[in-house]
Image 1 (cartoon, rainbow, N blue to C red):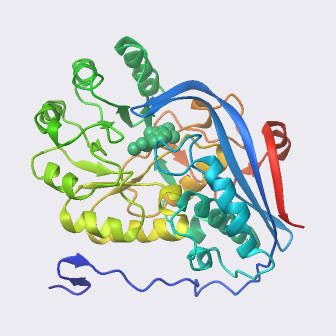
Image 2 (spheres, rainbow, N blue to C red; image 1 turned 90 degrees about the horizontal axis):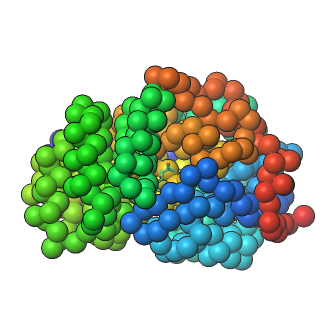
Image 3 (tube, rainbow, N blue to C red; image 1 turned 90 degrees about the vertical axis):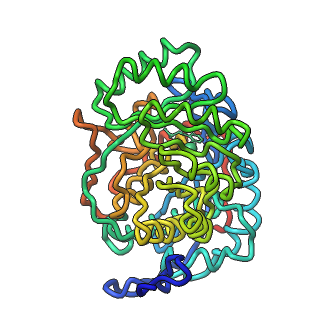
Length: 395
Ligand code: OSB
Ligand code: MG
């Protein structure tokens, strides 16, 4: 067995939590503010588990050494994508995560997972706080967040995720608009009754575009023959066709399909990623900061995939500007070689909460600013305007 592998499973290097080239800094946490903002979506977003028209978003502000680090919780309004919701995250952050940090010198954002380890799962809640600490750390060190995270790409390829529409015609119209805007990959949501029929319409009209689909667990192993019909559409990938908590049956399905499977919901941490890679349950992986618990774990999942030669891309959760910009930072890591679901602010919001907003060039790319910190200012007065509840932990 080659160096770095054991029993065919890629072996991870010991995590290095302190960047050696960076000086030690102090990050004593003075307070953690949790707030809920409400933002209506420009267009509803429908998946196999339901339709969203307005987002309720939990934002975290960590005050340390005179700066505010911001984080966004990607939990949904309901526990439908995974078991978390904005309300479970609110409870876990207020009662456990925020009190754990208060008055402590956390030194680096990467120390958060160890501090939060006593709380099982609740990864989206943890990610919101950990990412806010990284956001503050980048400001205090005077380095761009994406460089602190370890990234190197400065231009990202953007794709879009298009929800289930009221009619196939409406979907084709949406795709036409996104292609005209330059987006490099189209992903459509599918479920039984909205799959082969729409995919065939799309391919009939655009034989050569980069096209994938996402089922959000809408199928079972009873549908294998049906899923084989997707092969005709030359998809880049089929995302999460089976159960949200499954890896084993995805491996069984992948063995029967030419088309690459991609896991989203099933991957909670690097051990899930290693399991999936070892079992060949997917040939592509979707990484979401919230789903895996924040920057530290996302980096580990990224590294495991890179070692196994499995490309990754950044999934979206209908984020406001703060989560969106953190997604951009993560996407600068070298193995994010496929276009992600990180698209322009204006596809989601009439007015985003960051300045400048995230924009996509006519070539379908996003440029990463070389400024210290997150590189996009939080428009605090707009955040206040959208805030419906707020709680300060600390003083
Ligand atoms: O599975 O990627 C998903 C949105 C909510 C919940 C799950 C998913 C999604 C998306 C949206 O696909 C992607 C985006 O933010 O544009
Ligand atoms: Mg998905």
